[in-house]
Length: 417
Ligand code: SF4
Image 1: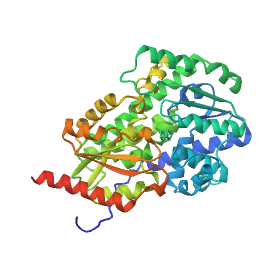
Image 2 (image 1 turned 135 degrees about the vertical axis):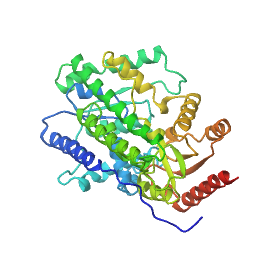
Image 3 (image 1 turned 45 degrees about the vertical axis):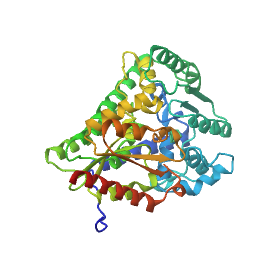
Image 4 (image 1 turned 90 degrees about the vertical axis):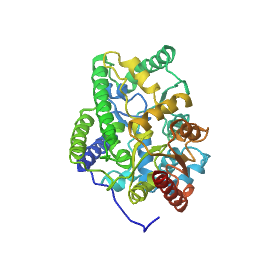
């Protein structure tokens, strides 16, 4: 491998607009938390946010806070506080970082937004176990700690296909939330309001999908690392007009890049797919590592997870049930592999990076032979890097660098021969 280069990816101009929208979102939550003027619901990232928004709640996502603890590199220092309460260092490091930060009385929001001293206080906690059991345990801790009601949906895990029984069951569970939420919010449920929010979420999803699909261009106008930042509005602002407005702006910029043949990574030679969680505290380092090798990590399952094109405003409960049960993370390996084959082909991928995140088995798909099966079927090589989403003690930067460099070398050699 040649001399070490530090190469940044091309800056996205729309970032300023996104930062403003995200700041508005956190300040609105902070005002409501301090004044009590609006009720606040905490929701899991792929929970029934549309129902909560339609009933007048402001919605806060602890997983987003977990990721902020990761990017700010505060996570590693606060995780032991949760361990001391019996939450193992081996379970979700979003959970342990978030609860640890609460126990310690710190939040990265204070550093990012002047005047915000703490996360917003919840009036209700709503989870969906579609992604993992950890979210339920996580919210249950706050429910006990803050004496706040806990509501949830239990989703069927690992099906190969979503049938009508699953949709019926999940839709009924979402409908069952209406009555308790009416009591907590003091607002009557209105079907038309829910339809409008679902329509906005659907529009946001279509645009986010289009944004991510621009990376099929050669060279790709955006990277996975951009995606992890710019997915913010799809996670916390879906169901609002702002998310729709933002993705129109971002999409315009990316289309312009394609027209001008501008890649996110200079001189793109290798096109890679990222499978698994990001390493939040190493986004920049990983981005520079790959860019320096003229490799563009341009697509991922992770960023795709906030595409919900099944939403249908005419059938809001059942379509929400379908969209939130059709997630990659919920499905069987057979269905996941089918999806991966499609992605490898669509984005014209040269190699796949699997991130084995120690504390998130749910998002580590390398553990049951999937990389080997997919390599055999597609002929596309892959590598697994060991690490974690948030706990930097579980990462060896040297090892990652050496493995990635060797992998790119292998890709280079296979082109020569
Ligand atoms: S899916 Fe993984 S990272 Fe997300 S909440 Fe569950 S255990 Fe944590």
